[in-house]
Every structure is written in C-alpha cells, then in structure tokens.
Length: 333
Ligand SMILES: Cc1cc2nc3c(=O)[nH]c(=O)nc-3n(C[C@H](O)[C@H](O)[C@H](O)COP(=O)(O)OP(=O)(O)OC[C@H]3O[C@@H](n4cnc5c(N)ncnc54)[C@H](O)[C@@H]3O)c2cc1C
Image 1 (cartoon, protein in one colour):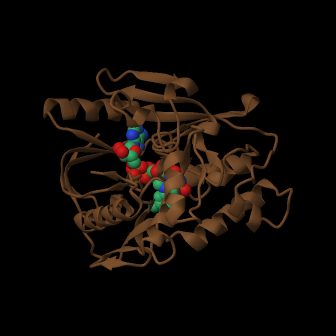
Image 2 (spheres, rainbow, N blue to C red):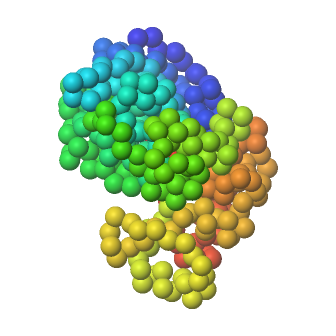
C-alpha cells in the first residue's frame, strides 16, 4: 500500500469540489487496510473511509488519511442464491451482474451511484426497495484490532437511511464485503407509485423494471458526470401526526407517507423545498436543481462551503415556514 501526500479530492467526490487530503491511499485488500490503519496510528491521524464520494460534501481540507476503498471481487454462492461482494465494487455494475446471473431483488436499486461497501452504511433505498430487504450479512474490519467480523441482519440495525455503521460504535468498523440473499425466482416489487405508473406491463420482466427505474432516474436526477451533485441532500423528515394536523391547517395538500412508527409520518423534503420556493434558486455557483428541489448542484467552481451555506439557508427557511428541522442525508466532512 502506497500513501500519497496532498491529494486533490475533486475527482473523488460527485459534487466535484476541491479539498486536499494530507494523506491518501487506495485499499485493495485486507492487508492494505491493516497497513493503512497502522499508518494512521503511527502518525496519530484521523481516517476517512471513501467509496465513490457520492454521499458526502468536503467543506474543508482533510488533514488525516483518506482510505479509498478499491477492493474488488464477487463470490457467487449459486446453490443458495447468495452472493458476497467486496466493498470496492461499483453498486450499479453489480446490480447488472446479478440480473445477468438471474438473481433478483435489487433491480429497483439500479443506477444508485456509489460503492457496495457504502450501501449498508445509509441503507440505500429507492422505488420501494431498501438494501436491508436483501442483506444476509455484512463483514467489517474492526479498526482497533484489524479483525474482520460478520454482522448478521439483526446486528446491522437497519432503518430508513440508517444503520449500526452510522453510529458511534459502528464507526469503529470498515465494511469489507456485503452478502446478499437474492432470489432466482422473479417476484417484481412495483408498488411504488411512480414506478407502477411508468411501467407498461402489470407483469414486467426484471429487465423492464431495471430499464424503467433507470429511465425515471435519468429524467429526474442530474447526472453527476455532467453536473456535480450528491443526490438528495436532505432526508425526508419524520413528524408526529399531531404536528401534521397543525400543518394541514395552513397546507391542506401537504403530502405524507407512512414511517416505521405508526404515530409518525414522513413528509417529502422535496415538497417542502419546492413550496418554500427553492427549486432552481442559485447562490453563486451553488444551486438547487431546476428538475428536483432536493438536489443541490455545483454549477462549476463552487466550493464545499458554498454548497454548505446554501444548505444552511434552505434549512433555516424550511424551519421558519414549517417548523420542521431538516437533516442532511449527505455527510459533511
Ligand atoms: C445522482 C445521485 C443519486 C442518488 N440516489 C440515491 C438513492 O436513490 N438512494 C440512496 O439511498 N442514495 C442515493 N444517493 C446517495 C449515494 O449514491 C449512496 O449513499 C451511496 O451508497 C454512496 O456510496 P459511495 O461509495 O459514493 O459512498 P461515499 O460517499 O464515498 O461515502 C459515504 C459514507 O459512507 C462511508 N463509507 C464508504 N465506504 C465505506 C466502507 N466500506 N465502510 C465504512 N464506511 C464507508 C464514508 O466514510 C461516508 O461517511 C445518490 C447519489 C447521487 C449522486
């Protein structure tokens, strides 16, 4: 494992913002990862585990060691419809490989940017499916000992855009691989309204679901290759039914959907931002997408701080108008 110094992180994040990593290394194996951890301990450096940088915003230089997870490999356990995939594999490419193998369950998660290792961190989800629906176990290295430990489904503590790995204890682990329980029997999951509406058949094939998801995403979300962004910037807030009743007095058409707890509902953050007039607004080179109010974009040359300031302004205005505190889905570094 070779450690580089003063590396510009612009090519390593989908916002395309510049920030310097004082130390940077590609990780392609358990041995590399242990060497990286030793290096950080010897120099007393903080570490940042980096996948494809599609869910974070660099707001300043990072003086520690960036470990860019480039560890590849897929192990198909055909007899069990199970597959173990290394953390550095590209998520969307992996979805395609599963489909080509006749293993189903993740077609709805097509075209989500990022690495496999980051997928369990925020329990990626889209179009009615979450990663947690198919996780069998997650393997992760304990940064204190270098030991790789297997976490079964229960121990991952998945919930909406959340998992054990996002919290204090979980941050002591680096995901090395994910094992999914897929199915060779095709059972489409097409209840999600916009997906159902866009599909031409009520009994679609896996490829039809995959293609439709890709089409919807392509029409709504800016391509990070062309316009820097990290997808949805804020999580959908969860509010009590009591608070909803109060809000409905002023906003009778406020859309809501069920949350994991019966007494609470989720409000689409995109609706709040649109209602507050943020869609298409710009602040210098930082802007809110004209297509999707929840997506903040780098028009070219914005700094991480420019985007952070825009996010803060949006948060204050939503708090003022709806008394709802938005939480970022994107990690601020
Ligand atoms: C256009 C666009 C659309 C998107 N759509 C969706 C969507 O529909 N649904 C959704 O859920 N997300 C979506 N996202 C967010 C993003 O794609 C996911 O969160 C993805 O899983 C991030 O992967 P990454 O490799 O880029 O992670 P990074 O951004 O590199 O890292 C994200 C976080 O995970 C940590 N991390 C990364 N790898 C590991 C590891 N191996 N072990 C421990 N920690 C790790 C990092 O330290 C960081 O805190 C979208 C993003 C974009 C740009």
